[in-house]
Image (cartoon, rainbow, N blue to C red):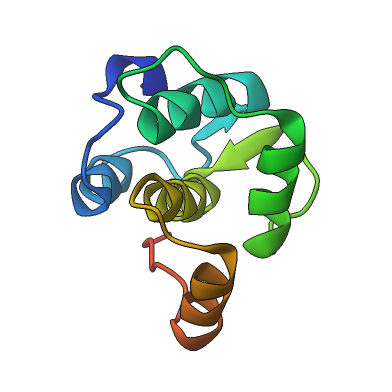
Length: 107
């Protein structure tokens, strides 16, 4: 499944349900993920998330530097993307992440 085939504003729980049906080793490359997150962040604009923002989001979610991202990484990055789309702040997000367990994805 390609992320580009999904509605970028798919709710996290629906995205998680779709991921449950995919193989354990499902992953997407960085470029495809950035494109999906850009459409999710700014659905009415043709803007693109820059690399610095992507790295900060990745670091805030404790995702190691890599070129390919698994299901849990994608869900975490969609969660932070949604937070900022709804005008959340970084401090609010970090507080939420530090007090909330990871989004579970069956392996």
